[in-house]
Image (cartoon, rainbow, N blue to C red; front, side, top):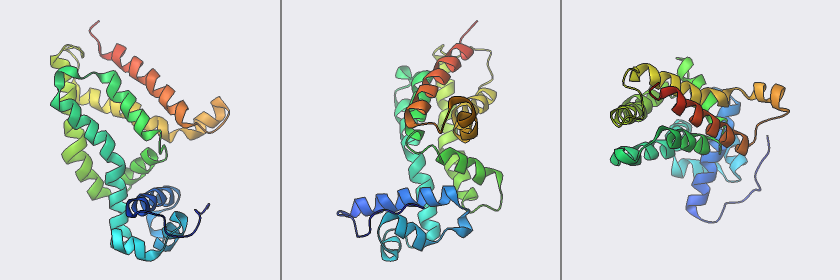
Length: 208
């Protein structure tokens, strides 16, 4: 596992951000129980004291990593709900792909957590999604339907499931990219795919 250069980074926020980035890297590549705070600190180029200072312990670091990685998408949903007349489905999908293209390994981690009841953080993640992101996404889809962007006869609950699949599951298909596109996808590959998915989704939900 590649390590950052040793030594405490300049600026407190830099150290905290590097710990979160390193935690995401470690937890994606190993099961929670196998990841040590020492490994995270070494990958971030800092020490255990910084983890204790900012997060207290391994579990709090893990949960903070989950919530803060999802925060940009949640913030985007809140902005859109505040101005429902300015919303459109395509821009939401593009924004999600652009955000997740920065750390494409994260959606597969979400899938792993949600599918395995023994995974640490499942209840916390369900709370973030079930009490925040998913209801807001649902409200936005209803707003779009009222504004005529989504056909009146479409079931919003089912549409939400389909759209979430289109947005999340491609990030779990790196093997497919390797086999059919000649290598591991880059950030721009995901952004380009997001453009395609956005156009596809808009055409699919419009009135015939």
